[in-house]
Length: 196
Image (cartoon, rainbow, N blue to C red):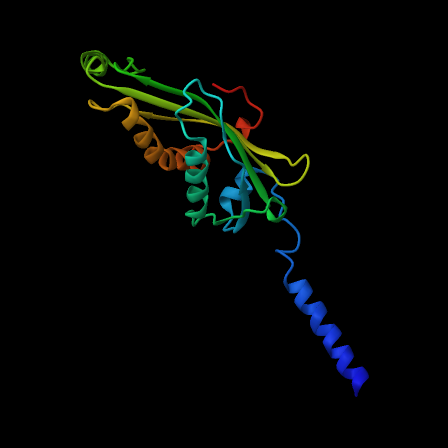
């Protein structure tokens, strides 16, 4: 009787031990298209971004938090943002490479004489801010395959905006632009392609 109780206890202890293992093996994607077209969920680890721009007022920690919230809020495909890299299927690594604030907005690329005339007329009255984030999404693990290699550019061009206000406006717009760049404009040819 004692022997059978000991055996049952051992089996239960092993079962608890295995059930506590975080998600068995990490999933590995063959392409970013596979990730985008799947239902998920994918465990993603977001590395703390660095601020390599000339503007040291930009908060890399704030942008990192925005990116984590962005992935956590996705439903198709779904992502679990993990704090332990060993539990990740995918890793997001990036840096802020540029932040610009201008009191007079530059003339942007426009098509047609009418659009150009409007842009010229209003550019001197509008403020301008731009942030560029360079990043890769790769499979987790040493030497994980790079699935997406891209630069996302977030801009704001309102009539009224101080430098201090520009940070909040850029941060607020970042999730929308990331969604377009990562999930709508994705292209497997962007992997390893020259950056703009």
